[in-house]
Length: 471
Ligand code: BES
Ligand code: MN
Ligand code: MN
Image (cartoon, rainbow, N blue to C red):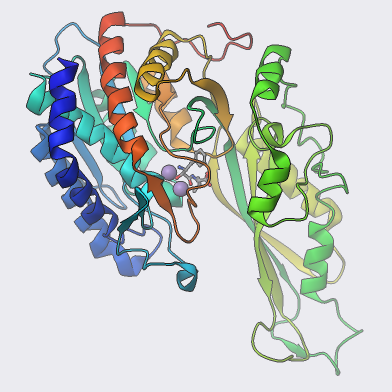
């Protein structure tokens, strides 16, 4: 039967890519109120594509924010039900002048599709839609029951998805959740993601006088909020890249030897990466490799810092305020609320004199891990082996999809992350793209994955083994 499906995919490939270009061409920027109509357009476009694929009960479901697109096919009695999650919203395209071609006029160059949202997450979620289409149009049906839940607010922290899932829990009920929304290890090494970092983000504003002040009249006599802010920020790390917020590492575990070894075995050229990134050298917490620092260690990063005069020449003022945006990546048992509290305590203890400090908590989400020994992960492993022609390795990703932990808890089901992107595809950056060979390999991999899940049948949810075996 797979040969019929492959034939169908070959025949339809041109049309599929044209459709994908249409999808990537819709500027569905969730953070921008000006793009609200585009959000609706993207949701409706996706719903139409899902209907055309042969999915049923397709619906654009309203939330208090951007809509969720739902669809299902539930005609595999006695077989597991999988829920595919993805997001049709994208990051803003700026800085727009650094794009080689306009961000929302997708083009294919060198078998790569360029456009904002190409890899994050439109092409990756589209692979799931096309896999379903291939089974339904050429394979006589799917080997499992399938539901789609595609949201439009992932890039803004999914503020309305949890209440939505709580309200529609029965409708979303599934034996596993499948997500393709991240990069694999490298171009020639497919991987399965067995963990995501959590997140704790905040905005920190330091305030001084009611208005900007002339720095000649007042300089030396009042605290400067910009100076105070950088002083405060500089207390958050030591020189060796460790976070110095008290208690920050309390719930972080050392990586089990087996996992440390398997991470160490992955080929990774740190010098080459430095060159590619254009940095004089990599930097981070002492005692850990780049791969460890960016996947299994927690971080605290300043994402933005501003205040005072930003225009041409110089303006001699003492700014009235200065702001930093900060986000932490969390691992293991670090809890976003507890980390927020720790940071608040740190700020209170280090608050510079003569200014006030205001903290605005932003996104949060817990880390997620699944044992590489979970039977459904094994199913993914054999699917990748065939789809990519090479056995995948197990890694943890440094990124965050905060809703993943919510999904697994609310539906009591394992989340299987079938990443199809690559790390150098410029997600969130100018010239974002997606390697189209992974479109083809991805569909092949997912076809085999659904067959393998169907063969395995129902499995218990087994989380977090630290020895590579289900606990
Ligand atoms: N697809 C990414 C998550 C991701 C990135 C997973 C890299 C694995 C590796 C997702 O769209 C994303 O950007 N998430 C945000 C979450 C935030 C907005 C709450 C992130 O990781 O910064
Ligand atoms: Mn994403
Ligand atoms: Mn993203």
